[in-house]
Amino acid sequence: MTDAALVSTLGAFVLEQLAQPVIVLDATGNVVAANRAANSDAHKGLLAQFQSGRRPAELAAFVERLRSVGHASLELPADPAAPGQPAFRLGGTAMALLFIVTLEQRARPAPRDSEQRQLRRLDTLGLLTARVAHDINNLLTPLLLLSRELVVDLEASGQNPSLAQEIELTAQRAADLMQSLLGFVRPARTRSDLLTLNAAVSNMRPLLELLLGPHVELSLLLDERPARVRVDRVQLEQSLLNLASNAVHAMPDGGELRVSVTQSSGPESPNGANGANGGSAAYAVLVVEDTGCGMSAEVQKRAFDPFFTTRAAAGGTGLGLSSVQHFVKEHSGFLRLDSGPGRGTRIAIHLPATA
Image 1 (cartoon, helix red, strand yellow):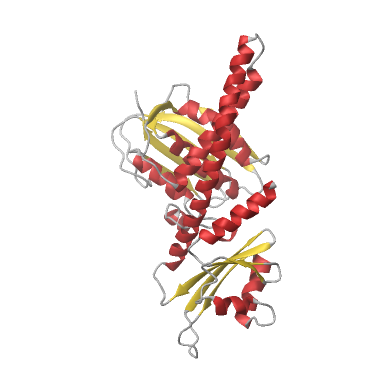
Image 2 (tube, rainbow, N blue to C red; image 1 turned 90 degrees about the vertical axis):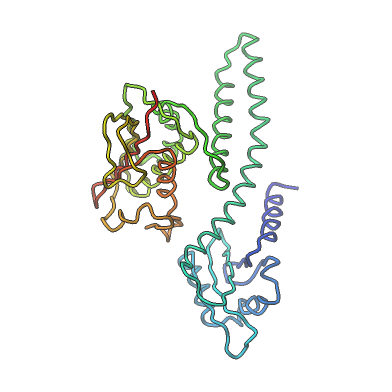
């Protein structure tokens, strides 16, 4: 079986396992696939309506919006002439040359419905991500073992093992990233790693440069004094990547991202901060600052609310800053946000320092 055939088979298998009804449309809006849930008696009438020539005006408009915008939603009320037919809510998203449409049977409007729909999508994405991450881990295991053996063999024969060591380090980094990914979709108990903040940030440079791309300059400003903290290293890296990702979207035409590590001693009061209460203690401070478009006062008030995003049309979930705030609170720290239209955004994370 070819790789393409294997991916297609796995995709079909995953689609069938989903409890939520899912319909796959081609570029013309015709049904090319539907999972078991979508083929139930409750949805057969709706499936038939998608076929060209029999498509009602509201469905035709829904398909046309999918073509032009890439995403669409539609409320289909229950038909009074057919008491047995339920009401539906449809959500559609473009993917390559296909449109993925999810169906939700509705009896009555639910409160905070947009957040519930977002959670369902994230649940499905989390399930698929976890499976893919496990498969990648299985591939990385022999790569790590073989690269370690290669390093040992080269050293024993007196040859330079530097390239083999780079392979091993890269594979280990990939394995750590997979664990980070699994930490997002299947949170585990928080670890406590004693690390130097300078080293943790320096080790993230290659990944940050890859994320920022060629149009955003990265500057690392590290304190000469070692700032030691006891935190979950994976969550720290995730938080830094989240902030860098936000900065990229705030600088579509390029700019600069400055990541600095400093220390703060003495009384600290997180007035106006978004995080846990501070106190009289020494803190290691991680500052992430961009030269992007900045945030208005209204956006700042809701910046750390789950599901609040200014990039909904681009697929933003509004969970990036929320997860950063959760990490900071979980480690007895606090953070400050300073931003304004046209003057960029500065976020300072204060973490209790360890002697």
